[in-house]
Picture 1: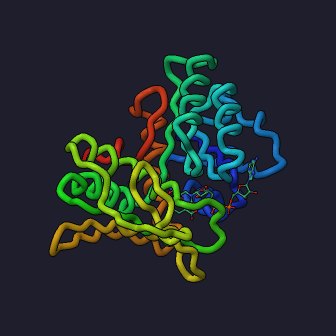
Picture 2: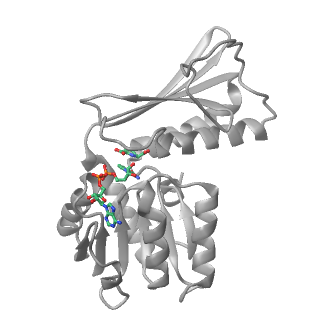
Length: 251
Ligand SMILES: NC(=O)c1ccc[n+]([C@@H]2O[C@H](COP(=O)([O-])OP(=O)(O)OC[C@H]3O[C@@H](n4cnc5c(N)ncnc54)[C@H](O)[C@@H]3O)[C@@H](O)[C@H]2O)c1
Ligand SMILES: O=C(O)C1=N[C@H](C(=O)O)CCC1
């Protein structure tokens, strides 16, 4: 039985995780904590894996505390930068279980989004132009989405490896309409009532276009990925920091 504690348990995602863990074979809910609760209640004696879905402003602090407490963590919260990831690596090395500690972070747990990201990285070297449009519910606090940042970084790395230069763009005036540039890729964020989580990657060459699109219509779409990550972290996931559900999908 994998004992799972949830941090951010009252949130939109955390409450779905509590429900998913309660309904999952081979898992039992240990602690369900939210803002104001004492994180030190989570220990290796009561928890095998913690699932953390909070807010970008607090997630790093929570993860560092959980590493210091010696428990493995699956993180869905966004807002990760290379600097923050380095702090996690450093905390694992300095923590109580440097050889066996596992921290897994996924920008997106939906299979459609993970595959779209993977296909976009594969397509990237064949196209001169590329832009990303991410579309989410208006309660989302961060823009652009963690998924779009991850997709942009993957595309940018693939373009660099293929020796492609910057995307063509002769914009002379821009009041913000061209979006945020992430690693050389323009990312546009839409916030619209009725939406949940959606991403389009637009690739262009002279006379042709490829659109790769993923839609999460419901937060239930993230739960199979969360449960897969919990099972992998509780079994054969590598020690250390792993980023991205693609690592567990045999792609
Ligand atoms: N990886 C994915 O597949 C995926 C999917 C959806 C959302 N997200 C991300 O997950 C995060 C949470 O999204 P949400 O829609 O559930 O947000 P939310 O605002 O509904 O929930 C956040 C919860 O965290 C709690 N919280 C805040 N500070 C805390 C603290 N210090 N300790 C414990 N709990 C604390 C809040 O009280 C709230 O209940 C966001 O970063 C979002 O982008 C990721
Ligand atoms: O609803 C959110 O917030 C989501 N956040 C993640 C992101 O920023 O990429 C994943 C999709 C849903």
